[in-house]
Image (cartoon, rainbow, N blue to C red; front, top):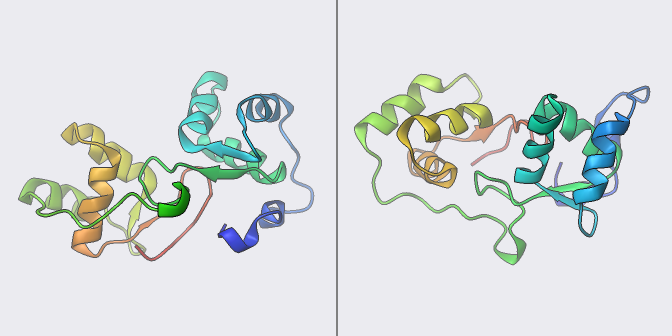
Length: 149
């Protein structure tokens, strides 16, 4: 959710959505100033054997703000984003990104897989997408579903 939605994240979910106590405990232990960074949230998911989405839902229910997106898209202080258009995008990287697109753009998890495949940073994939005018959508933690990039 956007900055303006701070304090209302739980409203993204049905009223009957329950907090996972184990995830909540880990989030609260690692949160600072009402924020949990993307890397810590994903680490919790790996450690507990749950999906990033489950961690994101629990963060929302606890009204924790996700910051320091590993794709560089949001939550990086005054700068907000870390991405800028790449100077050039290799034909191979362009092809991999285009092959992973759906009607709404490139999913966050697809961007992560591409970064791993090409042994480049996730921010480099985001920067390539910026150059190609491709939006990244469907955050694995649910911070955004579809956002123009």
